[in-house]
Image 1 (cartoon, rainbow, N blue to C red):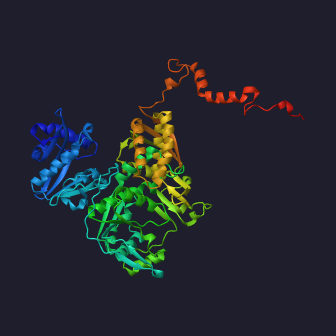
Image 2 (tube, rainbow, N blue to C red):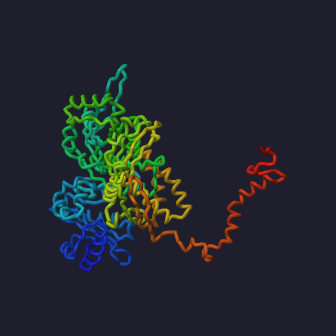
Image 3 (cartoon, helix red, strand yellow):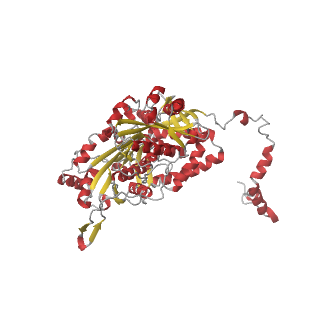
Length: 612
């Protein structure tokens, strides 16, 4: 590939490429003067026609610290290896200049990971945060991840998980000095040996269970514990003091990642495009979140050199399966620790006693009778009076939405714009994915949209009763469904509806990274190429009512459907069509009446009935 240093005559091409990506929100905009002033730090790639197809630059904060920035590839050249080759060139140039630490802020995490970068904390690079990020309009809802490459060690191309289904030929294990196995003597003189674990990454929420798990892991496995917490829209209050709490519980590090953009763009929207609904009503809010959290656990484990992951799921629920299937799919070499399947803690009182014994800081609050799970897609409620399906949910249980009875007496119209099946704007205002969900949540919750009460079949074989609040998701599903009704032909739409049932099962079962789910997604993506346009919905007291829809790719044509248009549809053709369409039914009936028989639908002989 033709990769070289930039020259003055390349400035217009670089400027056009960078600012084209800036308009999409992928990069910060640059000026011709800023490119000219830093021209020695730019690399470009040209194709056989001489056009610039990729560019990128190094930005030096100190002799030892540099950033990869303004990395862009033209759409027609994506997938051809231009970006990865350019990054390798930038790494070589940074090494040549004596750079020790190379970092980037990016949404394309897996792309940089394949080049040897590791996930890091943006706060480790305050120079970037205060020089560039402070002027970015998305600073309060930034969805970029910091990645870092230390050039003082040999470069590696170790495996990193990605939502694109990337699978390496081999998996490189982190090196560590294995801890000695820990043995426990149980009743009856049975000896149980725990696997040797050096460092574990725990899916951490800061609640009582995961707070107790931290010292339990250290006590029972003699290992270092890193807490990982994913922000997927469960509320800012969930993260107040979380790092200090984790460290006080005995963790060596607490890593918090804002994954709201990735959750909406790469998980919620693809699932919505598929039309996946479990058992006719459940929009899979908890199910779809677990693979994302587990994926990042694996990535953090590999970046931190951990050899194990752990979760706080109980041994009778669905979530343990969702976490552990993701671990298996993305890095089966990691050991998995599930304390609820091992420890003697069986109640809240047991957990509080353990916390006191180990000086774990737990804020004592009255426990809700309900078990809840929250993220930007939904809020779920289980337990309490819901354990009896005959009981109506109490209004005080709901925390996200108002009751339909208390909703405004005036309906509200919302317009949602889609491009190739992806929602891009609400009421004419373009928004990033997470903001679209959050905006529709507020609108839907105000009008009592998205409440469901469901008895569902758990993966482990039991039935359970749950109440879910999914206001924004309910609105999005309704809008997307209406646009598909305009733009998909009958056979594709009907097959897609059948496929959606299997897709929903795969998500519910935790098989997001299964080849079948990824293959179904490829089919869905193909169907979405014509799903562009807008849908207007009327929100009124728990109801989502269609108020209009439009698409430039609509297959509905009034002139085609008009009976008088003989050039499109000749009514005389109907006779032959009906004959052929029903031929197999006709043949079966003819066989039944042959030799004087009667069809099974023959009318009864009313002459045999007596009259009163």
